Length: 326
Image 1 (tube, rainbow, N blue to C red):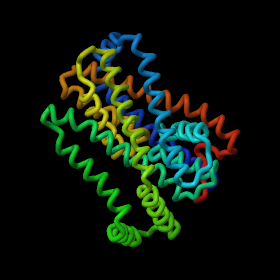
Image 2: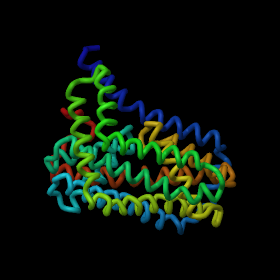
Image 3: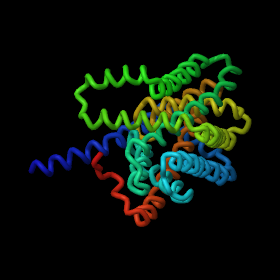
């Protein structure tokens, strides 16, 4: 095999590996839950709830795009609201299949709005930090009511606040950067880290950043509502809304730290485990996790590809999986 062909084959395999791992994790989850009990639970799902679930889940993506638009404007973007939402949804195509795929939105912003890489990445960083913080805070009442998980809440909140501190407190950032400089990293990576930190601090110091972060709170609430509606369709009254928020928070954090594409596998296993802890049978818990995955990944892929095709013509974007120069 020629060297160029070997390099291309290796690149394709690296891209396919996360997807293969995620599919294997989902397959393992189905087998552990028991396919027969899973099928029985799915057959009980109230189809009348499905359109509402899809509509609310679509609102999750819209809220993400609207909130991102405000951060892009603060970073110097001249994009219209509709274009920002379009690019945000287009980025979901990669988020669903690759680890750290959410940064694709930042790449699109550099191509469509002419933003610097650090400024565009800072908008995504700030949004995801505030979203995670609000999601965990929404989970707190459910955890406290059940007298469990308070350690998880404290740990995640501490982790998010630690990231905020590293980015905004100069001595802390200098210490972390100094440690990173000891690693064999290209100089341009350190320059990008510096730019990301500067732009993140600039965004966090703006009053409108805090004001518009309420949209991240709304998105967190929508995510909890989607799971709650799914469980209602499977077993009405099985869990309350606050407990659904608890499940979503634990699953989101579990998926994020797994670095699997879209958290697939780790996120779903967390949903199943916590729902069983809350008293649902394994079949119903597995069905809820699977339906949640189908809704979010299906919308991310379907809406994302459609939005990307439109945005590619409008902004002459590069390919979804091509490697771009930093």
